[in-house]
Length: 454
Ligand code: S3P
Image (cartoon, rainbow, N blue to C red; front, top):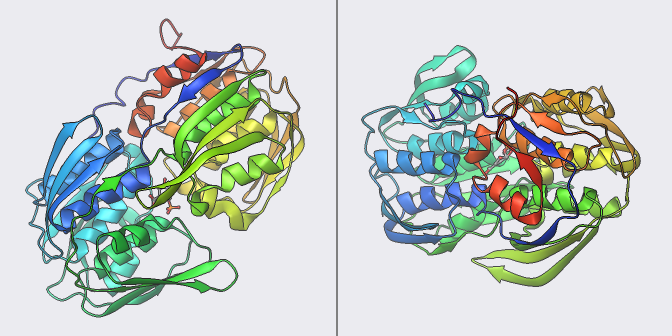
């Protein structure tokens, strides 16, 4: 089990003066997990720089090592992975513990599937509640055996890859990069072509990295918003250097903080601007946010930019459901921004939020209630009625439910509420953004962790 969680660490955010300065948030979590996984499947050494050294990713590193790869930390964010090749994984001796990480556990189920070995996957209480059937269903179609699983196919579970995996064409019932990636990673070990069809395109880091490591992969449009991805199985993956750009999902926190704290002016450096990750930026711009891309460039195969944000007067908007995959992790912090906007912001089609690290739809709603904000849930839609700058009252205690993004979102909110806002546990922030407190404080954010009443 992960190292934290036993003793909750509360924190209090207070109305802050203008946030100012430059910040470089840690490496992208999605790219970091994948760089370790692909490094472990390549033959030879892959060098990674800018790796996110958060707990989620470190658990992936440990699991790759347990499966036979040699994974070494060379310096801050600098890692070396000596891979064992597609089909070359060895059976791990112990349980693979992914802590809080849905991405690590789900992608590595696909990775293990292409090897005739058994492996047991486990995680913390949050991960044990999350649905895994969505991964097991396609993997079983490919010939994987589920030897053991908790009720409903949840963790802890044990998988065994077959001698000969069957390539499939899989139409994913939900737009999820985790499902797509698990099937493609399994497909690496299958003879012939494995195809994944999604009606709404999800983040494409797996496809990009497959190509970067020398696999034959093709991507075609599918319907109005979808994609069809086809991979030729059993390639020899060649090691390729990876530079991990800054995580737009982490950048979202200083970004929204700068928008809602009056007078702020912040530059967030080197943020990945992959179009399948920029739904929040598009939405905030529609709301009137003063956000500018500077120094746009390509780094390590991904587009990046320095993002300059100035405090802005925001107006509520309607966020279409089809935008959800490109901003799925950003709704909690968008809901915070929406409380400081004039009028209603309607976020449509949020069913997937219910199966994240927490039931995020409920956790956001409860947090807004604690802060005295106005909102309603209609089916899977969240509607927040903002009051303009000055926003919500604050004052309450937000339950974070082992969810890093709930903790960070409401700490951001407390920087602009009338009275301080408390969150009950910030320990899970270490899963994705270990330097959050220090970096936010550098910008001028007033966040206290000492002497906060539990
Ligand atoms: C991720 C995909 C998303 C996202 C998660 C990271 C990935 O999940 O919420 O934080 O790296 O593939 P889904 O694909 O299940 O929506």
